[in-house]
Image (tube, rainbow, N blue to C red):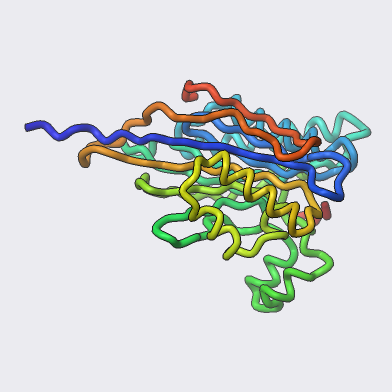
Length: 285
């Protein structure tokens, strides 16, 4: 008797808001079956939103299907943002964080590939456990990793938002990347620091533990970040993964992906919801 192929079902939903103290939203995100991207721009009144939107759109347009292609897409985004910054005086110095996860082909099997530049984060919630998968590239995070600062001190440090790595600031960028096996009952969260600066990991874990559609979870995360102060733009993209069937190679199946509903005016989101697969420098934001 033949063993049925495994089918992976992905559901996702996102929310984004300018917060309570910012005049505009400089975050951007993209979601399509198998590719999810979040970015947080920096660079003045116009530059931040241009940088994040350019980076997200460039990665999406490259339609990466392997880990090397996803890395190449982020490098391409870096070149595009850097070129625009250098050729438009009003955009000089702009840049953006960027984190992404994608279902790609690797060593004859489907896997998740994660990439990260900056301090936007990717979390995985599974079996009641919340794990931060990415590493922050900012001044205080490096001090914490070196043992020169505690996590509690970092939360109140005046340079906690100073990035040590960003897309578009330099001609080349160093990208962190990871490969993870596909597994069922995973819930991923991609978010900007407007979420993580306001909410403790225990708050995030509690919200992700609720049996609701990812869109509802994302809106709850953004709403609670505003309730806690809303000092920055906040964006949350929640991705649920279910795998059913036998032990054969997982097959990407149809996803449920309603368009995001924004909790406040001033949200700025680049999102697609089709069913097609589709020299170190320190900067403060």
